[in-house]
Length: 406
Image (tube, rainbow, N blue to C red):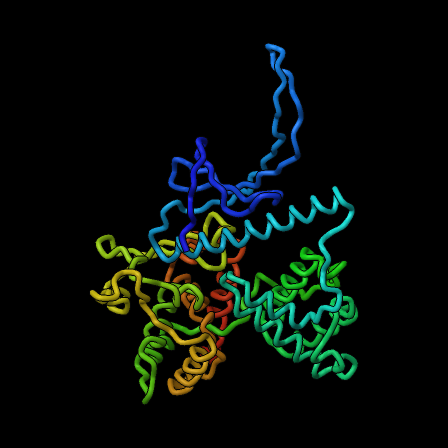
């Protein structure tokens, strides 16, 4: 839904806040095609005497720049989604600032529901969550419930648990449960999302203090723990067909193996992301959008990749999806069946395509800075683990040779 913009003389307009609301959410039009969001606080008025001796009422206002921006005329689905997410953040900030004003001026905050079922709150948090790792947020909640169910000490909380009943000993037991249940980076990934939920609960005054403080799951970021597909194994996958295969899943996974895309990025690609004349793919990573200067990625396309992409349908246009994929669960199920039919004895997930891409191009002579750029890494820290994987693969290759008898 488009904003109704009733501009003032200074190129500002009201977004949210009626008479008596403090602060109000405002926007100011910039010359670069964006609107800058800010909060306008009202602190009453004072009578001021002018130079000629007359008195007048001076309104006392202050502004807080949020450093958040909207596209004035969003042209693509990505820009419209960015506007939606930015507005949600700004509205939450406005509400919180209003609560802080009430607390400082009146000595109270608006009454909150005391008897909160934290499992319901987590579900509401997931429903309103808009970032690219939303499925991990859902998975973290599910794993927490599974933990409660399978742990006799906490089984009584399976259906209902109050925020204050989530203690540090419970969190320690939860991290141990995750580490016993998952291999590789799974435990660390899910616990990171769980901590994000808890942090939001603390910020929303649902919890008084964070029970996750000081409880960590260590991970060696310098080591690649997931299986990777060699060039030969990717070739096996391409050569393998089976009855009932989903051609869109097939195209998207092969594309990810040759471009290093995450599932959350490949599923949202539209034909508008493709520059056919310059043979380039341009997109913004869902994981780092709005948080990193390296969120934008540009990937050169060859004939094979352009063939995988195809051309947009005349009726649907450039905003239609290149790979109309089903759910992540359905994609994984199909991928596992495909890997098995190809005779590959590895635990392959969709993210393995990204790892395989990095390792294979390093093996073929690409330098680490090029790989970091193609993967959309802001530095070399996260890319270095792939060089270690290449060294390990080289050692395995040498060790596979028959023993030298001298």
